[in-house]
Image 1 (cartoon, chains in turn blue, brown):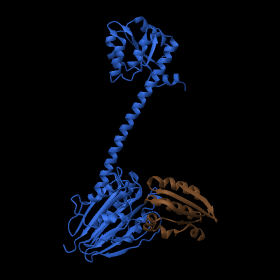
Image 2 (tube, chains in turn green, orange; image 1 turned 180 degrees about the vertical axis):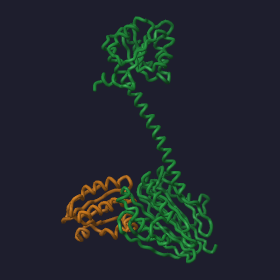
Image 3 (cartoon, chains in turn purple, brown; image 1 turned 30 degrees about the vertical axis):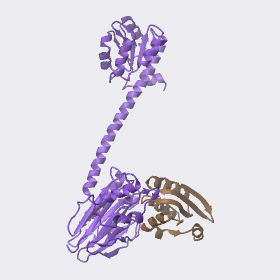
Image 4 (tube, helix red, strand yellow; image 1 turned 90 degrees about the vertical axis):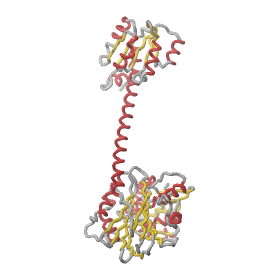
Length: 397
Length: 109
């Protein structure tokens, strides 16, 4: 499509020509020149004092502006167009009776887009109107596209924020008592793939879990929500939620990555029996939880190495038991808490463990651990979700 | 990020850099295109791999499934300690044969 066709065939934005010239004869001459362009809309303004109001109402795609008029200088009007929010980008072609380089230079320096000696040749005038109108129409369309994009981004951000609020609303309140729990969670994107929870299965058994869906964003969050609702609602068929290995095996069947858009997750799942003080746990591709006995800076690493949930069908998951002493602290977390770069080296679990080795009495609680890791990596934003849960067992309480 | 060659009937792919969220899908696509073929013996040399995230594990899982579906065999070698740790936690080292050096791995097919 050539330039003429493109400028003339835009049904949303036709070419609109405003001529400001005190000589009615010029107004009539230009009208006749445009007769062969029936889709163009022409407006003539004879009185320069009305030019600004006429232009604002007419919304031209190009202004033809006479230079010398009674009582007002045409270039003053050009100044007014450039400072008017509705007209500042409208191309303005100055019409002058003289071919004078200094006047031309002045016109361009004050924001005119073109300069013609009147009366110009018809073909040349049409070509220039078409050229400038086309540029202006493109500008309007681009601005509209940006506005629409900005609007849709705001809508998307609002929806993501609502989704994030929902995901957060599913996270449990901190607990106090013989089993006290506190946690720190920060998503690296609007909505994250980490989630966690704890609940009493019955009067004696307390379940604790933390999962990390591979990837971030809405897809990961949807899977994450689906999994925590399954666990919190204990809706896995024929599964005793006191048996961590059975829970993981069934989750592995239900959340097969082939049927969940290639997504899978890692999980740490444990069940504490308050009568026997036994903690039974199983993991699916998840980093170890750390169990610190009171006064002991060396933790036990609680892990049963196995594939992440959903990666391979028919996997069996191992289970282990550990006796929890009075005053013990258990930390369950996702790899996002330590998989950061420190001085261009990957931080490892072994580097992270010392941060937890003394009881966290800091005023900021677990937030102080997050701040410590942020300080080590040198910036405040984490690349992955940061989820850290601390469970304290006060058996004698 | 991937260099490949044939040695003693084994297709050896060496992966370098980081297998994180950004690289995982790209590396998986490249590897899957490379190993696409039936009955291949495939060895992933991980000596140049600095880091594997939980998302990066997907690369190994997908390649393992593809190779297995074509009646091939996939093995791993030369993982450095941080990568070895991830393979252990995810039990991939039990699912896939892992060797400390490349020559031993090739000889084991």
